[in-house]
Structure formats: structure tokens, C-alpha cells
Length: 428
Ligand code: GLU
Image 1: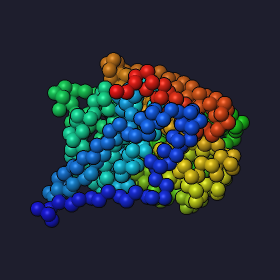
Image 2: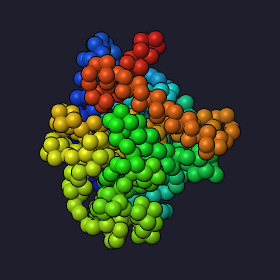
Image 3: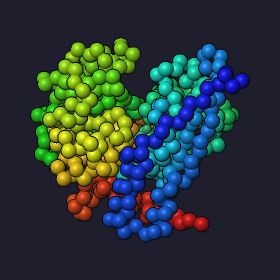
Image 4: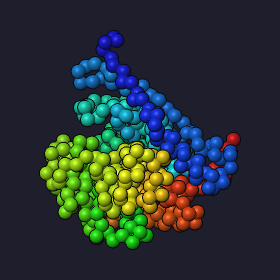
């Protein structure tokens, strides 16, 4: 049997700037500003629940491969846990814990009635067939069927997953309940109870908060330049929406290549190229090939990191020349880079605010599933834009009041809300 199965080792945790420590360092700073009492601090700093599952999956070659999966519920104080599922070789428990906590703060910042959770499986989805991914997703759902639930923990897509995986998850969960349960997961295909506007929602929120911040900085969107790192769902939608508002997108990149064009890249053309080219940008002829470092350090008004954690670190923070960073990804800036950016007058719309458009429309999807009614796109966009603008203003005012960065202010807003709710609910 031994040679029939293969165990995939969890990736080693980068000890340099691990995302959980980055999250905790901001949490500690915000807790100090708020004067959070020790008891609440102790409650909020620990994940409520951490589940590790082992998933034996029959691969197309007939052999069994055992995958490791995680689901972490950081908090359910504001409501059922909410957060995506990531398929990536770099997934590890510390990363999932950080991402789960970020979901808690994100939902609190945009004022939706959810706690925070996150899941992940160590796998390389690009090298797996649709059948293998379906069996893996169903195995994961089945292993966590008692954790998930429309009133308990509601997953959604994240890096490496999308509508297709959410459909399998919904189906597998529904089978176990003996009834169709669309509200157990968001980011579903439209025909299965998905919401209009969900796919582009995170990119839309990035655009709305970027414009709100540009107004404060007196940057005219129609005369602005922009670079977008990461060209997946978030980056490509943010790029096209910024382009529609007049911004010149001079640089784009994905994990295979980065391109630059002084005159502005034709984003629609880049999306079409990517869609025809197995989902990757490599070989795109709408700009000159540059390095990922050159893209991040380019002289632009707005930089949108929209890939993954720790791309702006203490190593390159001093070289960032953008006036404004709008974090489409979760955790793209490490905690150690924060002060350099702040001292260099680089404004940052932090992840827990900038990319909250996705979970906001997830909330609308869940509401629609529960009332059994479908909202038109203009209603969803209007409500998302309003939620994002209101959240931006709350964070901006808090930053002004305490003379702190928008990042710290977003944590202050979020932690204050969760702490107040906890006070009312109480513990044991
Ligand atoms: N994975 C997305 C995020 O990090 C969406 C989460 C959701 O919609 O629940 O915000």
C-alpha cells in the first residue's frame, strides 16, 4: 500500500515575516490605541476553532494521494464565520489562521453580521484534472460537514478556487443534509443561487476605495497612472474598473510575467489574451516585459497588489514610489513594512477595507438565498458601493482622530466593534 499513496508535506512556514505575526502586530497596536482590556484581548487574539483534516483522494492514475486541509474559525462573535477556501501549495495553518482573523476584522469594518473563518488545502490546482479537484473538494466538504452551515460557517472562493468548487461544495453539503442548501456557501454559479456582481465584487470594492482615497489625496483618477500586481479575479477586475474611470494602467503582472506600457495597457485585450492562454499572461504583446520588482517599484500614482501575502516587505518598502497602495490581496504588505511606507508618505488602503467588496456581495448572496429572491445587478452595485464608501469614511475619520495610518484605523474600527459585541454577549 505504501507505494500507492503519497503524502504532501505542509509547506514550511517562512519564519521571516509570517502572516499570522503580521496580523497580530497590527492587532496589538490597535488594541493599545483602543485601551482594550486584557480579558477581551485574550479572547480575540486566539482562533475560536482550528480543524485539520486528512483527505485521501483517488487520482486519475488510480492511486490515492492524501491531502491536508484546514478550516479555521477565528471568531463567531458577530455572526456565523465567513471566509474563503484557498487551494495552493503554500497553504499552511499559520497562513489560514491569519486569513481567518483578517476575515473577522474585514466583516466588522464593512459592518456585516459575520465572524471570520478561512480554509485551505495544500495542493497545486493547476496540475490537477477537474475530476481530481471535484473529488478533493467533495472530500474536504464531507470532512467538514459538521463545521459548515448557513448559520455556522459559510465558505466562499479564494485563491485557486471559484464558482465550480463552490457548486461541488454546495452539492456535497446538501446531500448530507438531505435538502438543497444554497446558503451554506457563497460565490456559487448564478444558476445555483449565486449573486449577480459577485465575481467582480472584490475588484469593484478596490476601485471604490481607491477613488475615495484619491479624492482625499487630491489625485484626479482621469489623470492617474496605476500598476496592478496579480491578474486573477481581483486584479483583472480592479484593473478594468480603474481603466473605465480614466486611470492609465501602465503595468500588470501575474505569477508568470509582468508587462509595462507608458501609454497604458489595453486591459480588455490582456484579459482576452489570458483567457485564451490557459489563464496566464506570459507572451502578452501589449507591453514590454519587466520584472515583478520593477512593477512593484514603478513610479505610478496607484499600486494595487492583488496576488498574495508579503510582496511588500521591509526589503523593498523603501523603494515603493507609488503615492497610494490599495490592497486587493490579503496581507500583501508585511507589518515590518508599514512604518517605512507611513514615514515615506505612501498612503495605504488596507486589505481588510480595500478587498471587502467580495465578502460584502457574499453577504448579499446569502441574504438572497435566505429570502429566496434575486436582486438585480444595479441594486447590488449600489449597495456595495455605499457599504464600501461608508466603511472608507469610518476608517478615514478614525485615522484622523488618532493621527494614525488607515491600516491601524481599520483595525481600531473592527476591533472596537467586535469587542463591544462581545461585551454584550459575554463569555462563560
Ligand atoms: N476570499 C474572499 C476574501 O478574502 C471572499 C470571502 C467571502 O466572500 O466569504 O475576502
